[in-house]
Image 1: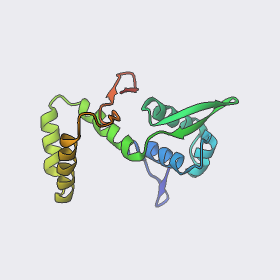
Image 2: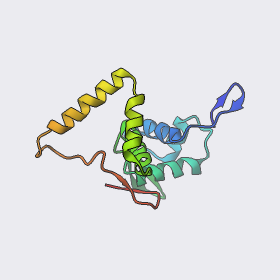
Image 3: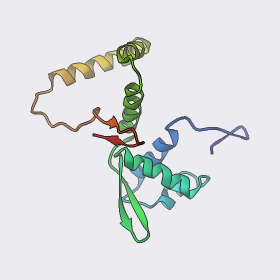
Image 4: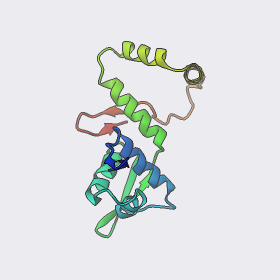
Length: 148
């Protein structure tokens, strides 16, 4: 666990997933959990790193291939995609989506509001035959995983 002023600091929700994914993206190729653990400073248990990698696999933001008795891990998405999945999962858990979205939009600083408006306009004007990556349509399967 990270330390601040001599005390252990509790990581924010999803922070460790983001750090693991960022470490994988910094790698020159597929790496094992021990490499990820060392890259993050080595203060995490090996099982913690494997658990986080397995959660990222369920979210379809990493892939793995068997290498002897362990796995080699490769990122398939970036940290922005992981954050978007978290945001979508939170939104999907709320009954009044309109109220949540309205509250979110009204709390945005002006620059972010303008950026969101431009992104929505670009999405509305994209040709129907444009390549669909499926981003933004991932849903929670209810068993801790996600499904596109």
